[in-house]
Length: 75
Image 1 (cartoon, rainbow, N blue to C red):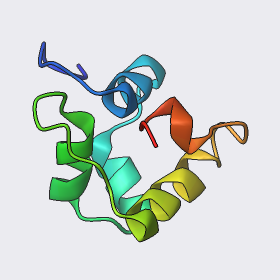
Image 2: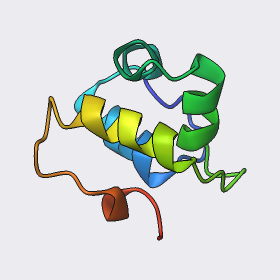
Image 3: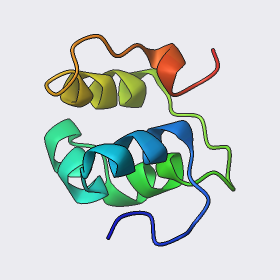
Image 4: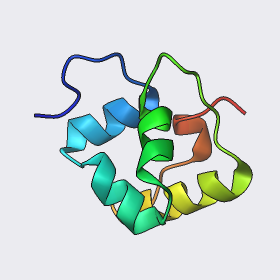
């Protein structure tokens, strides 16, 4: 089960809708699990640094090559 009823960010909802775990994203992007967790949580409004954003987008684009940063974060 993904999400566990917690409020989710756009990134968190995207992962949940595709059945992708935060751990997969952390491993694939080489970003810490805690950072991925913060980015998937809607309560913190955490914005990633540019290098972190690039790593996450590179990993996600293996699944959906059309993803843009605007799909997850307001720039």
